[in-house]
Amino acid sequence: MRLSVVIAAGGASTRFRKALPYSAKRPPNKLLAELGAEPLLLRSLKTFASLKAVCEIVCALSPELLGIVKGWRKTHGLSKLRFVRGGKTRAESVYRALKATRPAGDWVLIHDGARPLVQTAAIETLLRRLKSGRAGGFILARAVVPTIKRALPVSGRILATLDRSELFEAETPQAFKRSILLSAFKKAPAQERFFGTDEAALLEKAGYPVHVVKHDTWNPKITTVNDLELAEAYLQSQSSRACPWRVGLGADTHRLGAGRKFYLGGLRLKAPYGPLGHSDGDALLHAITDAAAGALGLGDIGEFFSDKNPKFKNIRSAAMLEYVLKRAAEKGWKPVQVDTIIHLERPRLGPVKDKIKMNLAKLLRVAPDCVGVKAKTFEGLVPAAEARVECQALLMMGRRT
Image (cartoon, rainbow, N blue to C red):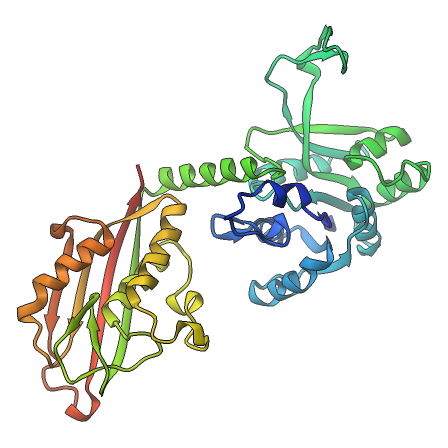
C-alpha cells in the first residue's frame, strides 16, 4: 500500500493571535506556537514522518510558514516532505496538496496541522481499516459523550434530544482512496467545492461510502489560546506520569585574562584577572544554565544568548540563568537540587565556597542543603600559561506544585 499524507497548514491564524495577551510572544502563525518546546506544525510533521507506510508528505503552507518549514526539512531530517502554497480556504489548500501527491499513491491521509497530539497508535488503528478496501474513505472519530440537543438558533427552543449512540466527532487524519477523493472534488458544484469543513462531507455528497474509525486517545484541534493551554497541561501531566523528575548536565570552561572581573556563582572574586568571554564569563552559572536547559530539552545556552549578538556583550550570567528558569517555570518545572564542581588553581575558593553556595541557593530558590559546591585544582596538569576555570553542574528539576 502506497500512502501519501496531506497536511493542511494554509490558514492565517487571525483569531488565535488576536486572542493572545498583549504581553505574550506573538508567532506569525499559530502553527509556530510552541507545545512542549516544539512548534505545533513540527510535531504533526514528525509524527507522520516516523511512519514507515508513509511515502510522501505534502504540506499546504501559508506564505509566512514556507521558509521556516523548508528549514525544518533539513534540520529535522524530514526527507519525505514537499510543499505547495495554501489556498483561500482549508478545502482549497487540501485540493492543491492532493493534486501534488504522486498519482501512484493508493491512499491519501488528510490531516490538520493544528492537531499536534495525534498519536501513532490512533493512526495505525485507522490504517488497519484501509486494508479492508470496503469504503471510499475512513475518518478518525470519537464517540460523542455529552447529551446533544437540537434547538432553534435564534430563540434557543429545544426541538429534539439526539441519539448520541449515532453521533461522532470527526477528527483527522481522514483517509481516502486518492482517485475517489479527486473525483469527489470534481463532482462538487464549483460554488461548494472549496467550502466544506472536511473531506468526508465531500465524499458523502458525491455518494461514496465513508466509515468512522473509533479511538479513545485525545486528539484536539488547536483553535484558540485556551486549546493550546489545555494541550500544554495535558503534555505536562503525561510527562509527570512518565517521569516526575528531569536531570540536566552542564559544563563550561573559560580562559583567564588580566584586567577582567572574576565572576563565579554570581559573586565577584578578588583577583587581578578574570574569565574571558562575551558575557561576564561566569563559568559556574553557565554550567548550571546549560544543565537547566538540557533537563527540559531546550538546547544549550548559546541558542538563547549567542556570542555573535552584540546585545549580549557583558551580560550578567545571573540574568541568563533567570531567563532559562523562567522558561522552565512556564513548562511547570523548577530546580530541586544542584551539585557542582569547580576546577581552578587561583584564587583559592575555600574562604568563599559557602558564599557561593548561599548565592546559588538564592538564585535557584532552593534550600542551601540542596546545593553542592566542590572546589578542586588541576593538580599541576595545567601550565600556568594556560590558566582557566572549568565547571560542571548536575541539576535536578521537579514538577512545580
